[in-house]
Amino acid sequence: MPYSESRMTTGSGAVVPIVWYLLNLLILPVISFIVLLAQFFRAGEMPEIRRAHTRAATFMSVIGAVLIGSGVLLAWLLSGNSGGFWTFALVWAIVLHTSFVLWGIIAMAQAMSDRMPYFPRRWL
Image (cartoon, rainbow, N blue to C red; front, side, top):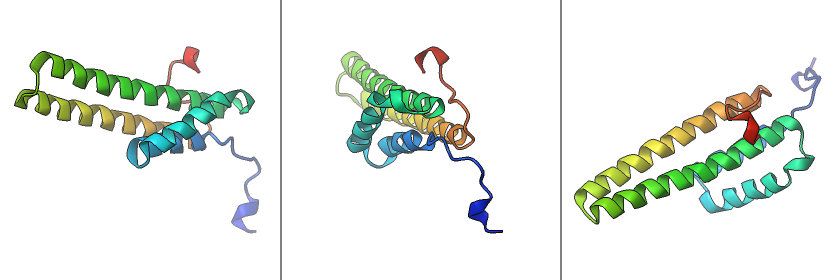
C-alpha cells in the first residue's frame, strides 16, 4: 500500500501561518509580515485551528517588534550613543529575537499536530 493513501484526514493548514511567522523572523521580514497580515484579515473563513495559529502568529510578530523597538529606544534615551547602549541593545535584541523564534518552533510543532497554539485564548 502506498504511503500517500494511508492518510485518512486532510490537514487543517495551521502550519501555513507559522511558516510565514518564522519567515518573517528569519529570512523575509517585511514581505512575510504583509502576507501574515493578509491571512489575519481573511481569518474568518478559515478552520478554527488555522485561525488561532494565524492570529497568534500575527500578534506575536507585532508584540516582538514593539518589545525590541521600545527596549532599544528606551536604552538610547537613558544612555545616549554610548558603548553601554550598544551592548544592551545588541543583547536585548538577540535574546528577544531568539525567544520569539523558539516560540515559533513550538507553535510549529503544535500546528503540525493540529493543536491550539500556546497563546492566551481570549486573543484567539
